[in-house]
Image (cartoon, rainbow, N blue to C red; front, side, top):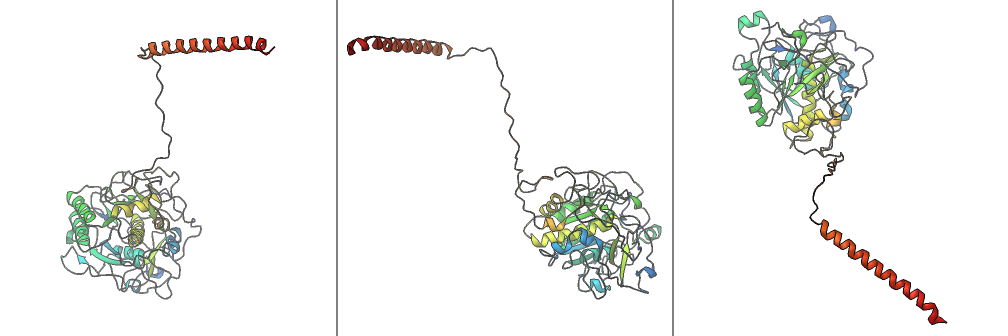
Amino acid sequence: MTSGARPRPGSSASRAGLALRGVLAWAVLGGTSLAWVADAPAATAAVEQGCGDEAPRYLDQEPPALAQLGAQEAWRFATGDGVVVAVVDSGVDDRNPHLEGAVADGRDVVTGDGTGRTDTWGHGTAVAGIIAARRVADSGVVGLAPGARVLPVRVYHAEGDDAVEQGVQPTPGRIAAGITWAAAQGATIINVSMSTDADDAALRAAVRDATARGSLVVASAGNRNTADDKADDARYPAAYPEVLSVAAVDAELRPTDASIHGEHVDVAAPGAQVLTVYPGAGDCWYATTEPAPSWSTAYASAAAALVAERFPDETPAQWAYRLEVTAARATPDARTDTTGWGVIRPDVALQFVDDGTAAGPPSPVRAPTSTSTVTASPIVVEDTVDPMAQAREGAVWWVLGGTAAVALVALAWRLVSPRRAR
């Protein structure tokens, strides 16, 4: 079991030079250890930076990722209204005014009772704010899907040795149970900002069950900084084919070695300089020194909520496909192990028409339309017997003979005609 991850605050000012949205991100994905870990760096929030109950402060900046993801354009089509996003995490503290009215009664899987609306670790609350924070006075913080409803599923209370001793740490069984419970409650999107390098049968079954029920599971591809095993290989549940696996990019939408690379990566999203809510009250900056896939996963889940609202009759695979095929990448028909199909562009995904002609990942419902020229089969010349050769040879001589006869008649006529005229 690895040490835990608590949100890390940073400077109260946004860094200058944020790249324009649409710039291609070559993200590296967050790894995990043999045990479950929240994919954000560990730290304790500082009161002087506006994080904490003792001196909460609301910051007038808008989260930088919103401009990068084209939020204003996306909100013309959807805000996540009516979509339930389950946050399978450390719980959600809805005392923060940003989350007032945004959080439904969930479940505490650790204790077997409770509503999940308690968060002593802080990670799940920050995730919920990224997804669905409402606007409040004197604050620029708002979620990417501000109309969505958060369903808190508390699957751990803390991480680290003390948590293990108390039996409140994350485990594969609890994560699986949380996913299954969320899907049974009708969650449209299930956010799992956690990962492990161990393939677990119960977890795999939970993902398949959730997908069958119509839920899209969105999971972190892993965080190298919080992992014991820092190798670039598969992380779970992100690596299951039904899951949308999310990598982190930095504040300029560039790849980062804070994340793990691998074939399991589907897309990338901003994971640095994240401005969201803090448990109890106030706004807080997170990941100011190192990007974290926890936050990238939350942005991807929010984007999926927008897509699900606009296209309620589509399947989880179609929602994921929209985000993949419209992601920003250098080569339209190629993915990479760092950012998958590229950095998500929810505003474009909401306007995408799947007619089978788009370059990139295959559509789950349409056969590809090929525009390439069919290559003709090579002509092979062989010395073979032609069954019609004899007939054709005879016909040629008849034609030649007939032509000669006509020519002789014409010549005789020309010779006779002048004499008759005189």
